[in-house]
Amino acid sequence: MTHEQDRLAPETPGIVIGNTTPKYTSKNPAIRWLTERWVANLEQAFDRIGGDSAGAPKRALEVGCGEGVIAGKLQERFDEVVALDLPDAGLRRDWKAYEGPRFLHADAHALPFEDNRFDLVVAVEVLEHLTDPVKGLHELARVGHHHLVVSVPREPIFRSCNLVAGRYVKDLGNTPGHLNHWSKRSFTRFVSSVGKVREVTTPFPWTTVWAELAD
Image 1 (cartoon, rainbow, N blue to C red):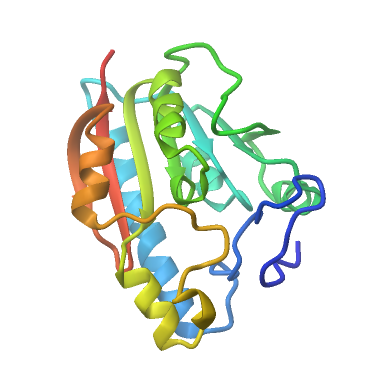
Image 2: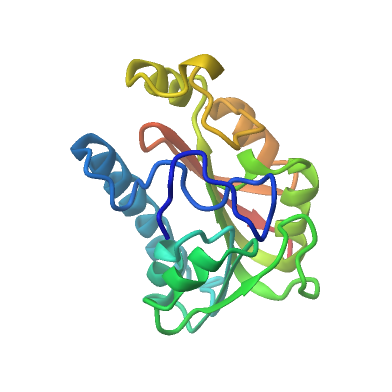
């Protein structure tokens, strides 16, 4: 997948698919460093969840998996991993690099699973893209029954960083496809509507929340 700036997926017209800025493979050392810290922060959360004797997960779902990097991290830790994103040929090519996760196409607003199907549900850099984030969040909670890990850009810091770097100046630093914006406090409050917030971390410039869903 080329991840060209402002790329619109032909299979899903009008929606930006994947990362507008290729953060996992960026040649910019600052972006790579920030991304690596963010991924390490997620992995630490996964390790703590995996060590939870009261509810260590076996079945994990990642919604909005993009290129599959985080799904690969999940597969290193959990028995069954399902990962999904909107239809896109480039993503399907990326997914071939990962053995283990079951990849499929689906919409976060209407997940094709029964209630309480997964022990751990993960959605990172997803909710800011949804036209109905409330519905999306409730879908994540519906198909999970214990752990939820969600991460979004921390605003207004994220947009400020874009402006400093000279990106998306006409849009006041707003990344293409970002429809929703949360501060650390507002996002924590948002996630608390579906579960008990257990941990909030802020790997710059993101907010990551681990919540416990009702069984």
